[in-house]
Length: 188
Image 1 (spheres, helix red, strand yellow):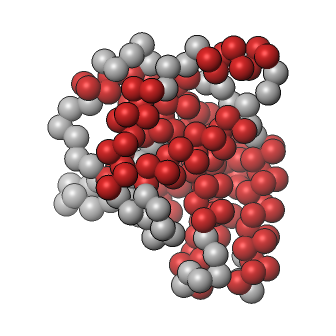
Image 2 (cartoon, one colour; image 1 turned 180 degrees about the vertical axis):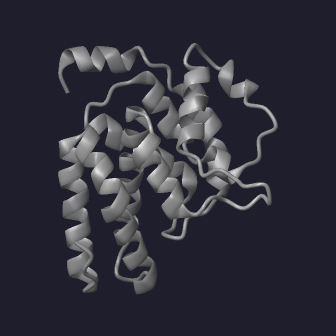
Image 3 (spheres, helix red, strand yellow; image 1 turned 60 degrees about the vertical axis):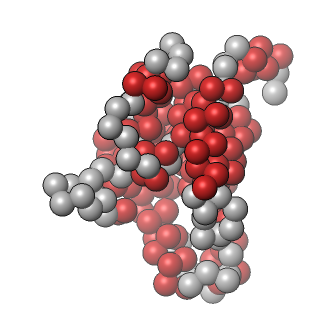
Protein backbone atom coordinates (compact mmCIF):
# COMPACT_ATOMS: atom_id res chain seq x y z
CA UNK A 1 0.00 0.00 0.00
CA UNK A 2 1.37 3.37 -1.01
CA UNK A 3 1.28 6.39 1.30
CA UNK A 4 -1.50 8.08 -0.68
CA UNK A 5 -3.65 4.93 -0.38
CA UNK A 6 -2.97 4.75 3.34
CA UNK A 7 -3.94 8.42 3.70
CA UNK A 8 -7.14 7.80 1.76
CA UNK A 9 -7.95 4.80 3.98
CA UNK A 10 -7.25 6.81 7.14
CA UNK A 11 -9.96 9.28 6.13
CA UNK A 12 -12.66 6.59 5.99
CA UNK A 13 -14.59 6.28 9.24
CA UNK A 14 -15.40 2.59 9.48
CA UNK A 15 -16.12 2.27 13.21
CA UNK A 16 -19.87 3.11 13.02
CA UNK A 17 -20.29 0.58 10.21
CA UNK A 18 -18.34 -2.08 12.10
CA UNK A 19 -20.66 -1.48 15.05
CA UNK A 20 -23.72 -2.02 12.79
CA UNK A 21 -22.09 -5.18 11.41
CA UNK A 22 -21.65 -6.66 14.90
CA UNK A 23 -25.33 -7.56 14.74
CA UNK A 24 -24.21 -10.35 12.39
CA UNK A 25 -22.21 -12.07 15.16
CA UNK A 26 -25.36 -13.98 16.07
CA UNK A 27 -25.70 -15.43 12.54
CA UNK A 28 -23.64 -18.62 12.13
CA UNK A 29 -22.13 -19.71 8.81
CA UNK A 30 -22.14 -23.25 7.45
CA UNK A 31 -18.33 -23.14 7.31
CA UNK A 32 -18.08 -22.17 10.96
CA UNK A 33 -17.69 -18.78 12.51
CA UNK A 34 -20.31 -16.16 11.91
CA UNK A 35 -21.48 -13.63 9.34
CA UNK A 36 -19.66 -10.77 11.11
CA UNK A 37 -16.29 -12.38 10.42
CA UNK A 38 -17.25 -12.91 6.78
CA UNK A 39 -18.06 -9.19 6.43
CA UNK A 40 -14.60 -8.36 7.78
CA UNK A 41 -12.94 -10.82 5.46
CA UNK A 42 -14.74 -9.24 2.50
CA UNK A 43 -13.55 -5.79 3.63
CA UNK A 44 -9.94 -6.98 3.81
CA UNK A 45 -10.12 -8.57 0.37
CA UNK A 46 -11.16 -5.20 -1.07
CA UNK A 47 -8.35 -3.44 0.81
CA UNK A 48 -5.91 -6.11 -0.40
CA UNK A 49 -6.86 -5.09 -3.96
CA UNK A 50 -6.37 -1.42 -2.98
CA UNK A 51 -10.02 -0.66 -3.67
CA UNK A 52 -10.01 2.23 -1.22
CA UNK A 53 -13.52 3.56 -1.82
CA UNK A 54 -15.44 4.68 1.26
CA UNK A 55 -18.86 3.55 0.00
CA UNK A 56 -17.55 0.17 -1.16
CA UNK A 57 -15.67 -0.55 2.06
CA UNK A 58 -18.55 0.50 4.30
CA UNK A 59 -20.99 -1.59 2.24
CA UNK A 60 -18.69 -4.61 2.54
CA UNK A 61 -19.12 -4.47 6.31
CA UNK A 62 -22.91 -4.78 6.12
CA UNK A 63 -23.42 -6.47 2.73
CA UNK A 64 -25.36 -9.42 4.22
CA UNK A 65 -27.25 -7.45 6.86
CA UNK A 66 -30.47 -6.96 4.85
CA UNK A 67 -30.70 -10.66 3.96
CA UNK A 68 -30.24 -11.69 7.58
CA UNK A 69 -32.55 -9.14 9.23
CA UNK A 70 -35.79 -7.40 8.31
CA UNK A 71 -35.63 -3.63 8.08
CA UNK A 72 -38.68 -1.37 8.16
CA UNK A 73 -36.48 1.67 7.64
CA UNK A 74 -32.87 2.25 6.69
CA UNK A 75 -32.75 5.67 8.37
CA UNK A 76 -30.31 4.57 11.09
CA UNK A 77 -27.86 3.62 8.31
CA UNK A 78 -28.63 6.47 5.91
CA UNK A 79 -27.93 9.07 8.59
CA UNK A 80 -24.89 7.29 10.00
CA UNK A 81 -22.57 9.49 7.93
CA UNK A 82 -22.22 11.33 4.63
CA UNK A 83 -21.98 8.03 2.70
CA UNK A 84 -25.01 6.44 4.35
CA UNK A 85 -27.47 6.76 1.47
CA UNK A 86 -24.96 5.47 -1.11
CA UNK A 87 -23.93 2.60 1.17
CA UNK A 88 -27.56 1.51 1.64
CA UNK A 89 -28.17 1.72 -2.12
CA UNK A 90 -25.13 -0.46 -2.81
CA UNK A 91 -26.10 -3.02 -0.18
CA UNK A 92 -29.63 -3.16 -1.63
CA UNK A 93 -28.09 -3.73 -5.06
CA UNK A 94 -26.21 -6.81 -3.81
CA UNK A 95 -29.10 -8.14 -1.70
CA UNK A 96 -31.36 -10.88 -3.00
CA UNK A 97 -34.79 -9.41 -3.55
CA UNK A 98 -38.00 -10.91 -2.28
CA UNK A 99 -41.04 -11.57 -4.42
CA UNK A 100 -44.65 -10.90 -3.43
CA UNK A 101 -44.75 -14.21 -1.55
CA UNK A 102 -41.71 -13.24 0.51
CA UNK A 103 -39.42 -15.77 -1.18
CA UNK A 104 -35.88 -14.72 -2.11
CA UNK A 105 -35.05 -14.44 -5.78
CA UNK A 106 -33.25 -17.56 -7.01
CA UNK A 107 -29.47 -17.35 -6.58
CA UNK A 108 -28.78 -17.73 -10.30
CA UNK A 109 -31.21 -14.95 -11.18
CA UNK A 110 -29.70 -12.74 -8.47
CA UNK A 111 -26.16 -13.23 -9.79
CA UNK A 112 -27.26 -12.65 -13.40
CA UNK A 113 -28.96 -9.42 -12.31
CA UNK A 114 -25.73 -8.13 -10.82
CA UNK A 115 -23.67 -9.37 -13.77
CA UNK A 116 -25.95 -7.73 -16.35
CA UNK A 117 -27.26 -4.66 -14.51
CA UNK A 118 -25.01 -4.11 -11.50
CA UNK A 119 -22.86 -1.08 -10.92
CA UNK A 120 -19.08 -1.40 -10.89
CA UNK A 121 -19.14 -1.21 -7.10
CA UNK A 122 -21.76 -3.98 -6.88
CA UNK A 123 -19.65 -6.23 -9.10
CA UNK A 124 -16.49 -5.55 -7.09
CA UNK A 125 -18.32 -6.25 -3.84
CA UNK A 126 -19.84 -9.47 -5.20
CA UNK A 127 -16.41 -10.63 -6.43
CA UNK A 128 -14.79 -9.98 -3.01
CA UNK A 129 -17.74 -11.74 -1.34
CA UNK A 130 -17.34 -14.75 -3.64
CA UNK A 131 -13.58 -14.91 -3.02
CA UNK A 132 -14.32 -15.04 0.70
CA UNK A 133 -17.00 -17.69 0.26
CA UNK A 134 -14.93 -19.88 -2.07
CA UNK A 135 -11.92 -19.84 0.23
CA UNK A 136 -14.17 -21.09 3.03
CA UNK A 137 -15.31 -24.13 1.03
CA UNK A 138 -13.47 -27.41 1.35
CA UNK A 139 -13.83 -31.06 0.40
CA UNK A 140 -15.96 -31.70 3.52
CA UNK A 141 -18.88 -29.95 1.80
CA UNK A 142 -21.52 -31.79 -0.15
CA UNK A 143 -20.24 -32.25 -3.73
CA UNK A 144 -23.60 -31.22 -5.18
CA UNK A 145 -23.38 -27.89 -3.32
CA UNK A 146 -19.76 -27.32 -4.37
CA UNK A 147 -20.56 -28.10 -8.01
CA UNK A 148 -23.50 -25.67 -8.02
CA UNK A 149 -21.39 -22.99 -6.35
CA UNK A 150 -18.57 -23.45 -8.86
CA UNK A 151 -21.01 -23.39 -11.79
CA UNK A 152 -22.62 -20.16 -10.50
CA UNK A 153 -19.16 -18.67 -10.14
CA UNK A 154 -18.13 -19.68 -13.66
CA UNK A 155 -21.32 -18.42 -15.28
CA UNK A 156 -21.79 -15.17 -13.38
CA UNK A 157 -18.99 -14.13 -11.06
CA UNK A 158 -15.98 -14.79 -13.30
CA UNK A 159 -17.42 -12.57 -16.06
CA UNK A 160 -18.02 -9.81 -13.49
CA UNK A 161 -14.46 -10.07 -12.24
CA UNK A 162 -13.06 -10.09 -15.78
CA UNK A 163 -14.97 -6.87 -16.42
CA UNK A 164 -14.07 -4.96 -13.25
CA UNK A 165 -10.75 -6.30 -11.93
CA UNK A 166 -8.39 -8.62 -13.79
CA UNK A 167 -6.53 -9.60 -10.61
CA UNK A 168 -9.77 -10.67 -8.90
CA UNK A 169 -10.57 -12.68 -12.03
CA UNK A 170 -7.23 -14.48 -11.79
CA UNK A 171 -7.66 -15.16 -8.07
CA UNK A 172 -11.22 -16.44 -8.48
CA UNK A 173 -10.16 -18.74 -11.30
CA UNK A 174 -7.18 -20.06 -9.27
CA UNK A 175 -9.36 -20.70 -6.20
CA UNK A 176 -11.89 -22.52 -8.37
CA UNK A 177 -9.20 -24.68 -10.00
CA UNK A 178 -7.77 -25.57 -6.57
CA UNK A 179 -11.24 -26.46 -5.31
CA UNK A 180 -11.87 -28.56 -8.42
CA UNK A 181 -8.58 -30.40 -7.87
CA UNK A 182 -9.36 -31.01 -4.19
CA UNK A 183 -12.85 -32.35 -4.87
CA UNK A 184 -12.55 -33.89 -8.34
CA UNK A 185 -15.44 -31.69 -9.51
CA UNK A 186 -14.73 -30.06 -12.89
CA UNK A 187 -16.66 -27.03 -14.13
CA UNK A 188 -13.98 -24.86 -15.80
